[in-house]
Image (cartoon, rainbow, N blue to C red; front, side, top):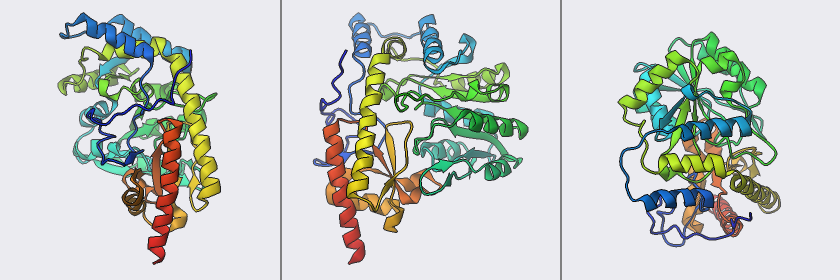
Length: 391
């Protein structure tokens, strides 16, 4: 079945966070897609809507089976039913777990630059952010294990949030890297929360490795956050899960999620997830191929038209991390000029920590024609920034 990702869907006036911008502006910032979700999901939701009664729901066996089947088939990892707990979203779950698994003023380690909301989940719950910056060689990122172990060894460090695959740098962590993280965290008694929400948005032909699948140390000392929402563009459905193999840790997480009242589904959360994981595979594969074409186009355009920038190779997510270091300015300032002069709204890298202040993040989950518009605006904005800087 062919899917039309070239279709322009007008999202203005729909209460969209992404598109709550001025007329003429082009938002390519927050990580949601401008594509309609898979028709199989829309059909499942239409059938649920047609029923007309939207009372309290349960988590049926079909929900567990959908998650277990998808991870076994797609990622070669068999989860058990008992491991899975429904939650309304990955971010609420992370915040809940920070509250439940730490005490105030303890340190939570993150590898920066990383998803900016991790900072909120840590600070808002009375803990301190401990950054272990990723090593950057001017082309790609890697983990600085010397720095990582030194910070894990701090007795005040009790929790680590791992981003797997990594947002915003688009990195798929390999098995050896994940195993080494697991060993170090077990050694220093640091629990791992692995945010794997981008795991299904890998480059065609590539897959990610679930952290809990790597070793006994990884499995018994971790909580994995998973959801169909990022891959199938359903963030507003508020449907996700945590997978916790360790029964003692699972009980603590379960208590936290229920205490925080984020463990009950709305009327559409279960059918949306079940349809995604049982019927959405073909759509997702087509989407991944389409997004890959956009990534390749941006790399080509930057090389030919904007050599003052560079693109960090991206193996996962529909986001690109643009290195503006040669411009000699701050990412937030560059983003402001681009938006003011062209209407193109990108995420500035400052908010992701680490060396993010020399980067911009660009969301490519939109039709190819929109990507082309974004590239034209990007070039005009960069030239305007350089002209202003040279005045």
